[in-house]
Amino acid sequence: MKNFALGTKKQMLSFFTSDGVVIPATVIEIKPLKIVELRTEEKNGYNAIVAGLGSQRKEFKMSVDELKDLKVGDEIAIKLAAGDKIKVTGISKGKGFRGVVKRHGFGGGRRTHGQKHSENEPGSIGGGLRTRVPKGMRMAGRMGGDTIAVRNLKILEVLPEALLISGAVPGNRGTVLKIEAL
Image 1 (cartoon, rainbow, N blue to C red):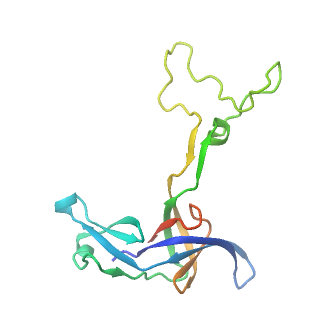
Image 2 (image 1 turned 135 degrees about the vertical axis):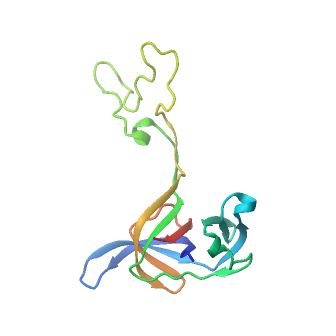
Image 3 (image 1 turned 120 degrees about the horizontal axis):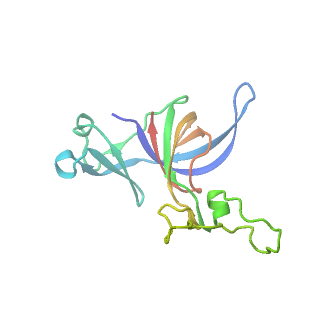
């Protein structure tokens, strides 16, 4: 069976290895995972389980063999050890409405030749012969709040009801994260 879990992001801290190297680390609280729903090939077109953590629900794809032993209401225990590589998926911090300079890294306008307030202007958005704005034109808009997956994070330590993971994971404190072994 695949090794996976749901957890909540608690905090970031500095982890000191035995040889004195400092590694940025994240503490993720792991809670008991219950199967809320089973999805099968016949009914849904694919095989997966839906696991719940509080009011949050996440889906984990599985094979037919792994799915046959499970039923709704079963609890799943995580089997990860220090040194294992994992993939963590979560929703990034929302940053609200942002202009093109912050959102896409545009250069903005110059402050010379009689221009006062053009530091954050996007510049031209149309072409000479076009009478419309092309699809995919990068403009100001909402930034953040996207689903982000971070791969190849290393488990530094397995604590009681928590994992200490190298590096940063998406989201604020309290964000529900999907953790899968690689």
